[in-house]
Length: 112
Length: 115
Image (cartoon, rainbow over all chains, first blue to last red; front, top):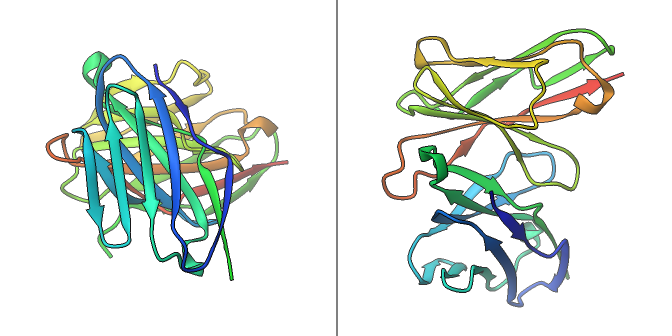
């Protein structure tokens, strides 16, 4: 199985940049996802990395290093609406089912 | 709306009762997942279907839980003899294959409260 670790909570100021880290251990890595989840709502897909490097999508970027078992989500120009939980999920091909396993999430609080 | 639909959205029941949740995935998605989420935690995998076949089931899932996906369309998750520890948000998600990202699309969830 996977062991996924991410910080429980982070705070940042509106307009700033924040980096949320995720480390993982898996035997059959097949992709890493970041999801955003506002309180009381369903998770929504933000980004996907399967190869090493940086993927940029607007204000959000995600980085992956497979050799280090490490990823981060970078949020730029923070807005109040970015206050949410950010979930790191790793997909493993063990058993052939390719099921994503989620970390516990990082609660981001953006203050004025 | 062509997203993932779940119902009921909320269910309050007494301990020992049976409950059933329904999930209607995005129509062209062949993969369907059930997860459970409690406050402050990430979604925890319960079970997975590819078309109508249930291919994976979490070892944490007790035999009080059963899921079906007849004809590879909608799915139901039944919990028998509910316990207070079953109180959680039950999330359904669907995806299409694993080509590209194959990201999961989640429904709004069914919140279960067991009294």
